[in-house]
Length: 145
Image 1 (cartoon, rainbow, N blue to C red):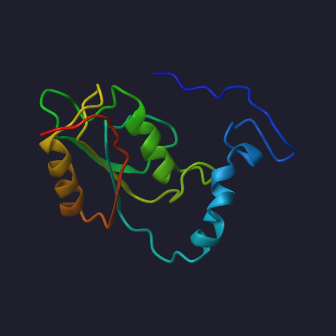
Image 2 (cartoon, rainbow, N blue to C red):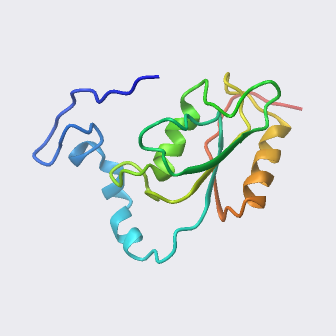
């Protein structure tokens, strides 16, 4: 997989990283810098989603990943899990809210985005690995018995 930075520029503080400056309004909106200034210890963070691309250049802090989806590797065949992992803790502080924290990714959703009991298994694995915060970005429609 190849990564490239789209040529997106906006505002006086923007640079070649498309989420920098005014474009990444979320970091300022939630006052992430103030929160970071109060953090004294980097805790383990768990993400449960569609897997993670551990070769992504901004995710070198993914300590471990494990699949709880039958027949699928921990790799992300969807993209959503890698995106969520980056939002939680990418090594670039303009992107990762908990930038550089140790990350554990439990694949509980398939490459197609569906899941079942593997979600619970992935959560339990993250807890067993010592994760103190779990991030689960799941959604869906309809009803299930």
